[in-house]
Every structure is written in C-alpha cells, then in structure tokens.
Length: 639
Image (tube, rainbow, N blue to C red; front, side, top):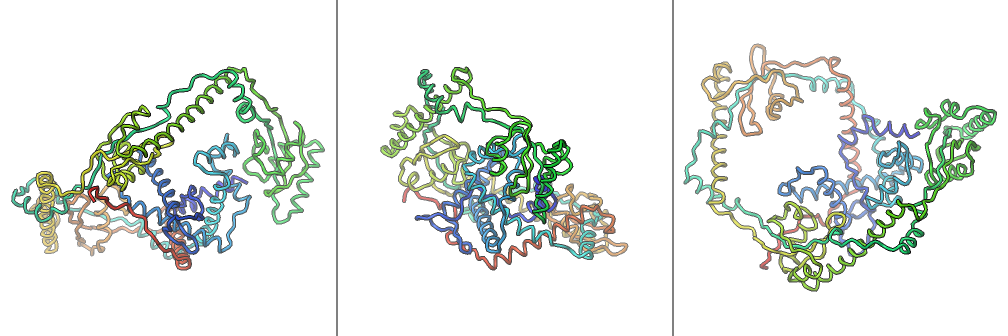
C-alpha cells in the first residue's frame, strides 16, 4: 500500500516534474487566502486574494530557506531583494491559480490518499514506520497544526493529480525524437585562436587625463549607497539568571500535573495485520478476509498467511508486522478492534477506508509510570521548573524592554541600565544588509524605517531567531553620495584598460577572420597575431571543459564544406576573444545513443505539454497584481 506511493513519487516523472517544470509548491507554511481586516491586497488570482500579511509570511519562510541553503556563501551585498520578492509572489500566484483550477475541475484527494502520502514522508516515521507523535512534533516545530498541514497537503495532492493527468499522457513522435537525439549526440571537431584579454591589458597604459575625463563624464555612476550604523541592546534567555532549585512540595505539584504526559509510558502492542483491498468487488474481498479468518481459527500461521495474501506491500514481506503501536496511530475502526484484543488473539475482519484487516496482537507492554522519587524524574522536574521560571522571567523582561524602549525613545541608556544590558553597535551596512545582526530582515527593515532613520527613535523589540529580542536605534548615518575621484580612480582606470584591451583583441580577431576568409590557413595566420592556437578536440553540447560561450558559438556554425573549414567568433566569459575553426560535424545514429537519452526527451515533451496547459489555465484564471511588493524606498533623515 505505502510502497506504491513511494514508487510513484520517486520515479522519473516525479523527478522531472520537480526539476524541469519548476512549479514550486513550497508554501505549506502559508495559510489559506482567508484573512480580513485592513490587510492590503497584493494580488488577485481569479476569485482569491493574496494579502500583504500572507506575502510577508511566505517571503520570510522562503528567505530563511535560502539562508539555510546558502550558509556561509550568503552575501547580503549581492542579494537582490526586489527580484526575490517578485519570485515569491510569482510562486504564490501560480500556486493559487492551479489550486483554484483543480478545485473547480473536481479533482479530489480522499482520506486514504492523504494518509498514504503523510505516512510515506520519512520525517514523520520512526524505525521506518509512521509515528503519530513524531508527526505532531515535527509539525509543531514548523508552527503548523495537523489540520492546517493536512488541508494544504490535500490541495497539493489534488494539484499533482491534475499535473500527472497531463504529464503522463504526453508523447513525442518517433521522427521528432530521433532528430532531437541526433542533435543532442552531435559532436564537432574544433580548433580556435585565443586572444587572451589579460595579455592585452598588461600592455595598455591609461593616461591620467583619460581617467579624469571618464570620471567627470560618468561620475553619477560612481555612487556610494546610503548606509547606517545601529546601536542596539539584546535580550536573550541566556541573559536571564537561572532560578533557584525548587522545594519538594513544588516538585510534587509539578509531578502530579505532568505525570500522565511526561512520566507515563503508554501501553504498546506489537501488531501484525493482513490487508485485503476492496478492489472492484467489495463483497468478494470481504469473503476472502472471512476465509482467511477461518484458516486462522483452524490453526494456520498468521505470518505465513500474511506473506501470501496481504495487499500491504510495506508489511507483507515481514508477515504483516506493523511493529509496536500506541493508541491514536491507526484509523478508528482499526483501533477499536486492536485494543479489545488480548496477546495472542486475532480479530474478525475489520473494515477501514483501505480495505479489510485481520489484526493479530503478538505481545503487550503495559503502561508504566515512573515514581516521584526516581532520581531521573527529580532531575527532569527540576530542569522543567527552572526552564519555566526562566521563560516566565524572560517574558517579564521582554514586557519591560518594550515599555522602557517606548518611554525613552531618544536613547537606549535607560533600557540598558534598568535591564542590565550592554549597548552594542553594528558595523556599517546598506539596505541590502550586512553581517551578523544586520543580516536579519527585521533589523534591515527597522533600520531604514521612518521611525528609526527619520525620527531618530528606538525601534519596537524585534524578534531575532527563536528567542532573542533586540531594540535598535540610529547610531550613524550616511546619505547616498557621489564618490570622489580619489576613491574610484583605480576602478575607472581598470574599466578603461579593460575596454581598450577588449577593443584591441576584437580588432585583431576580426583581422584574423579576414585573413582566413582570404584563404590563409589557421596555423599560418595565427603566427602573425598575439593569439594562441588551441585544439578543443571533439565537443559535445554538454561539454564542461571549455567556456560555455565557445561551445554555444561552435554549435551555431554552419557545417563545413568538404575540404574546407567553417569559421566564427566568440567572446568568452572573461572578455577574451576566440576565432573558431570548425573542421568536422559527426552525427550519430539514434540507436547508438544511450536509452536514457530518449527518456529525457519524453520528459521534455511532458514538460512542454504541462507548461502549455498551465498557460491555458492562466487564460481562464486571471492574475492581477494590485500592489506589487517592493523594497522600501530610501528615507531621508533630514526630510
């Protein structure tokens, strides 16, 4: 049962859907489009509205995912906020459009499909099997309730149904596939003359007057962005003094309150089952279950019958073994029968949405309660008490922090003195952010807000990470300004040198091309230039050893005529120029290519089919941007 789901979600089609079609349904953390109040509308998708609060939650979720993905490679100064915002909004409108379409088209993911999907997610499993407690704990860490998660997963499964209906029926004619296979496998024999830009730059001397003139002509391009330094205080749980050890009477009250949930190990049952799917004839499947029940009553071995008859692929090979189960892990009717059995007993056929089950209890572990005097219980109670007292004290300090920051808007000194905190200062950073605290979205937004930048007041307490709070205020500010000549002279000189070098390299390359077209051989013509002759050998389209611009240009050259070469030119990624000489084009027979190549083109056809289908959906369900989210405009502190 579960194995079939795994198979469907791990094959080529599923991988292709994720990697090629690129429809990112990554907003399980985004609530449904149903919020009210004065929340501005960012976009309207058909009959649904995307509110600003929803967009902000989605943006923050995606941004945190991006930070985790990049790790130490993240560069705030290279992060394009507007482009990232647009990407998030595009994904949200795309998801809303497809979700609305599938709902109107009647696609439906029933409870059985939903349960199978959830059960097959490794993060929700313990020892290879779905675990209810693990499921709830994982969702809680993501601030999700099971109801909210399941509703959104159900919508995602319904979108998958629609998508698979299109993708699974896509095809490509054999003639077209063969032609594409031949093009994909084509190889080109190439030589080229490389005019290395670095060598030209080393020979060029730029006059000071030219540098000065370029600066005067383009000084508006050399602008230093506005930047700010922040003063701040930080409140964290670690800064709260640890609570004193509680007395035994306090621990006893805490023990009584926590005994059932924390110190009681619930009863567990080691269970096997045989599942008979309903199939096309529910009565026939029930009759089969009853026949198996009769065989068991007659002395047949449960494990043997499960291996031979169960339709649950996940447990069949182990004789129907479901492992140790606690209450609340299985469907209601299954649970009712299971917990009425004694060790060694087998149930009558039990109906669930998955089929008919015969349930057998191998062993029972009774519930156990750790006593109050157990040293581990005492230690856990003490830690629990201290943690709660620390959290309580931290909340009190948080409220005090907010109050003091509001009552003393022009300074952090009173806040620091009252709460015994240290006033710290960030490094300079721009609207793109910086390092440390300045990389936090909430801090960047507050730093350039009217409240902090223009009015010079303390910010509200800002949540950083899971538990820290900071209050920030402007320490120093520099408005956008034109950089002086002395600051950018080297930069201007470098740009001029590169321009002149590139122009000289391109001129020499064109002269070489003219010589080749005049009948000179490549080897002879190169001798009269600063170029270096190179042999690229046999190139494929997926070649990674040469510059991508060189490979692209090589496959755009016309086929050479017999006894001649085909010439062309390419500007490489580093600015160097190459003159290309194509000697031979080799096109393989379709049958000579690996089988996976054909599968890849089938996937390509499927992607094109779905993209076309998605565009048609877009014609039916219109997307209208009401207030496109943008990065905040600069706020002048002097205005």
